[in-house]
Image (cartoon, rainbow, N blue to C red):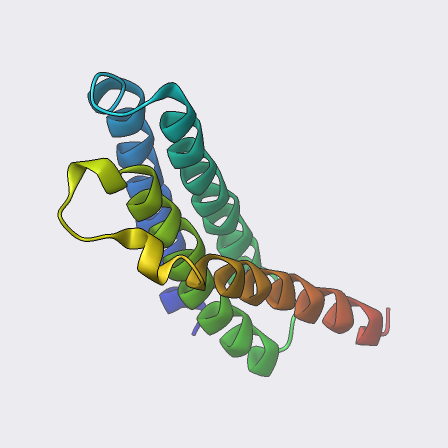
Length: 128
């Protein structure tokens, strides 16, 4: 599981850099500055959680059972949170109305929060 977590962290990190560059250079002429800032929020949270997964996959302070739960919570959380933000911020560029699925943004955020809470709980349980 650690290898999967670390590979996913690397993929999330690489794609956040690519999306960040795209947002900074490719989107500025196409969407409002407010929408660019919103897009950057999605990029920032994706990178935060790529780094979070690097830690989770590298540490022995978190149980394997918790690592598995954290992994799935973060992957789905980033897809829902950052993914919906990417769609919402670039909504004017597509024919699909991302506002119809905007409800998944807070669900994604909640999943990310739960992942962090699981880490906290594992740290509390650790006897050292």
